[in-house]
Each structure stands twice: as C-alpha cells, then as structure tokens.
Amino acid sequence: MNPELIDTLVVENTTTIVFVILDGIGGLPHPDTGRTELETAVTPNLDSLARQSICGILDPIGYGITPGSGPAHFALFGYDPVIHNVGRGLLTAAGIEFAMKEGDLYARVNFATADEKGMITDRRAGRIDTETCARLCRRLNEHLTGTAGADVLFVPEKEHRALLVLRGDNLREEITDTDPELTGKPPRVPRATVPEAETTRRLIEEVTARARRVLAAELRANTILLRGFARFREYRTFEGRFGLKALAIANYPMYRGIARLLGMTVHPVTASVRDQFGSLRENFRRYHFFFLHVKATDARGEDGNFDGKVKAIEEIDSLIPEVVALKPDVLVITGDHSTPAVMASHSWHPVPVLLSSALCRPDAVMHFGERDCITGGLGRLPMVYLMGLALAHARRLSKFGA
Image 1 (cartoon, helix red, strand yellow):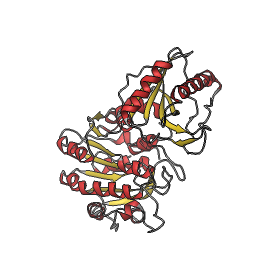
Image 2 (image 1 turned 90 degrees about the vertical axis):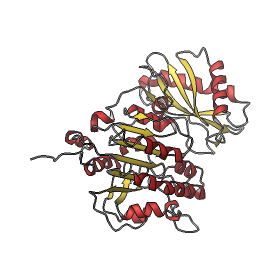
Image 3 (image 1 turned 135 degrees about the vertical axis):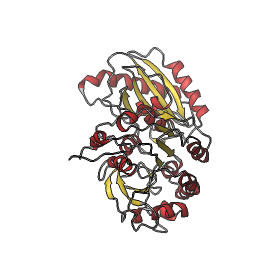
Image 4 (image 1 turned 30 degrees about the vertical axis):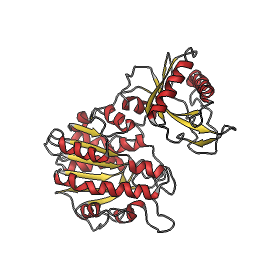
C-alpha cells in the first residue's frame, strides 16, 4: 500500500496526538541475564500503559536493514524512508538553523581520534565538549581559506559533531562517506557514485587532507570523518499533509532539523528530559501533534552502556504519568530504531511500540518489552504505516471508497 494514501483521507478534527520517541529503544539480551534493556528496566508506568493499549513491533526500513536516524524518523512521520532519504548533512544544517542556500553542499562531521598509522581508535574523539568543537571549527576555518573550487566552512553542532558547508558551483551530493563506521580501520576514501560528481569528490578529498594536517597535533580530535553529503531540498510539510499543527520538543540538532524540514514548530532546547515533558504540558492546548524526542537511550546504547540505558528507560518511565494525565486522544510510545548496548551500534532489529487510545483494541501484552510486544495486536508492520494508525485512532481519516 502506498503510505501517502492517507493524505487523501485526512479530515479536520481537534483531537491531539503525542509521539514519545525513545531513540534507539530496542535492544538485545544481556549475555548474563537473557533480558534486554527494556526487559531489565523497572517500568511500572509503561507496563500499565501497555496493558491498556495495542502493541506491536515496527521495522523502520525493511527486514534486515539497519536504519540511520534520519530515514527512521521520516518513517515515523509517515514519509516513505527510501523515497525521502536525505543525507545527514542537510539534517544537521537544518537542526542548527544554518542559513541554507540553493546549491550548497552539506556534510555531517565527526571529530575523531586516529593512531599513528591512521587507524580510527575513537569515532567520537572521546565525546569532546561543544566548546572544544567550536575551537576546532574556528581553527579549520582559518586554515582552509583559499581551497580551490569552493568556499569551505566548518560550523559547530554539539560535542564531537559539526557541519561542513561547501559553497560553490555545480557541487554534487553523490559522494560516499569517509566514516568507516568502525574503529580499527582507516577513514574511507570518498568515492563519486556518478561521473558528474568526480570534481566534487576531488574537492572533498582535498578538504579532508588539509583538515587532518591542521588537526594533527590534537590529542583526541586529530582527524575528521564525513558522512551524509546532501544538497538543500524541500519537503511537503506535516501540516500540509495531515492538517496537524505540530510541535517538536527535541534537544539534539539533527532531530530538530528533521522537524524543521517538515514544517513543525521547534521548541527551544531544554535543560533536561524532565523539562522536555514539562514543555509538553505547558504547550498541550496550543498544538494538535507533539513529537517528544529522548536521546539518552540511544546514546547509552551506542556507548555500550547496558546499565546506563536501563537507567535512562527508568527515568522516562517515571515521567510517563505526566503525559497520561494530559489525556491525549492518541499516545504513541516507540523508538526510531534499535541500539542494543551489546552491539554498541544501531541494528536491524524491530522496535516495540504501544498505541494508547479510547478507540484501540487492547491486547494481551502485559509488559512493554520486545518479546511481549511481538505478540501484540499490531503485529509486525512497517514503521511508515504508524502515522496512519495514529490518525485513524484520532478520528482524522475518512472512509476509503464507496
């Protein structure tokens, strides 16, 4: 079924939908206990909500495909993640509110650590602080002026992350990443995937080599890794498709960028997860749709910190009653993808989901976890169809056909 079929069925209503997205929530069993992070965590509130909801598991892209956060979030919002896939660079640019121009080429930068042989030992440079990232960007900008073929600008994002902007003529985005996605390997050489991108490829190779020379004396952030090359493009807005006035409550730039590209209002960054839930409460009567994004679950998973991810889940569980008390017409709790701590990376495993609504058919699920949710009434379905289910339960879709 075409996921955009729902666009033709949208009707006006005043009902409210809340998506609480626990980034990277899916996990794998700990070798010592046989339980995942969700199954290990003490989650009385999520479990109680699951018993009143309809549950299932979602495949962000397709069977066996490990998703990036970008396409997974597009799927969550009902945009086909393959058709609407976009490089991480554009999401980063939108997320930090960079003044984008037609023809610019963007890439996500990771400051990283390489050993004397050029092998990557830490893809995140020890998660350097944002102040250090800004200092490194200023230094690169000072030394990379005069690059042939384009203006070059490094813009700090957060911690070890930055944005690379190339501004010139006829720049192409069909370039492979230099990030090997693993330690113990050297950065990849950028490759043009179409002949027309070869000039851009050579430019990127020059920028990368010069940047590494500038950073060579740094103890941790002595190299850069690039991924997600993308030029600016426009998307059909969330409100235009679904008639939903939407607020995004997300603290990390990339997720703010996705929301901004889809025309959502983006709430100012908050100091804590608890403040994010407070912002939901304060704005609840002003919008029809809320996207509340929690990053800690994914960050602890990527760090390989099983116990830390469990604690992050338990903190969110303690805040769930605040959402339930608002009585949204539809409440969805899920993740964008799995980030098992035992893998310390994204994975292809489907993610649990619960949908709470006065119009749902509660199933027999007793615990919000992977093994329980797979038995739920939603079964296993593509993530891109979740938005249609939320709209239907919010009485925002009309009948199809006569």
